[in-house]
Length: 79
Length: 389
Image 1 (cartoon, one colour):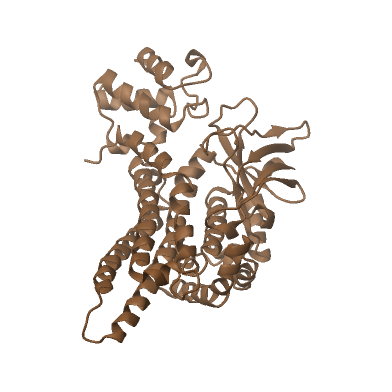
Image 2 (spheres, each protein chain N blue to C red):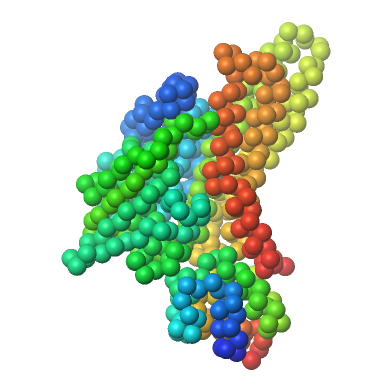
């Protein structure tokens, strides 16, 4: 799952740095992800994992790190 | 009145109305004509300690809510749009420090703002970022002693030359990406402003929003603790949209007041015959009511959730706050236009008691200050993922 998350981040996050260099707990917004880019990341994650982020999850904290995204997806996919 | 009546709200509203009528309104034409700072209005506001109404009482303020401040702004906006807008912008800066400046330094600074009735301005826009305030070129630089230095080319800093302090956005450090921003308090003696452009506009002329090269330095305690992104989404943006909307509601109301007086005067000339403009007035009042309810409802909603971080961070809240600005900035122009149609030549003339020229010029500022297209694009983007079912 991490590999897919990172692939999506690399494609849609528009980071000025290599996504491979971002650690699991690093703040993605501080690493350069804008709120505009984060919506594209959300859309790509929804498509890839065939989930829908409910309203309560649509906030900055859900997408602030690779680890946070993984926790959210785990919750939605029930894995 | 925007908020539910209570003793503090009523007291503030009454004093604001007096300052609007007796001071700001009297100088408004001259402030507009000469594009000068509304000095006398701010002397009066300082005398009433209005610059610190949002500051908690234990720090010397009045502990007012944003809704109560919105009502002050509205009262001022009925008489001088520039006074109301400057007051609104100042309160937006104060709100940011009250809600995001937890350090001893910023608590002391708030007490100083209250004690000395300091006026705070904002430098968020920057030349080279295409109007995107969530992006900075300017950066905080640190010297070996730990002091900070920043330099910014700002296309506008409203009332910059009249402010006692300026909150400026900057990248966290020279290595930070453009969106990793902090908010820095810039103040004398560590603040230098060099004008780089003038302010000769259609409306809001008294805000004196010149462009400046800003150079600031001082200790690292001048940086607010929270990231600018959080300050912006939780406080600066919602409070801005509520208070700006209150300025525009004041403008719209002043135009409607003129239309009402005009229609009554017409009716008195021929009792028994309802003037055609009375029908237009009925339509206009319904529209004003829509705007009033929108502003007061959103202000109330903000005050209810302002301590609930989860609610403030939600996409639904951001969409609501964006929509408020787009709706009210559009409504104000429609309302003033309709008032002009009712008053006819009397409204079009510059030398009549029904003159709406200044109001119309000010009203057009609403859609261009933070362009509605930019705000709608942002909302459109969020709507791609947002669901509220």
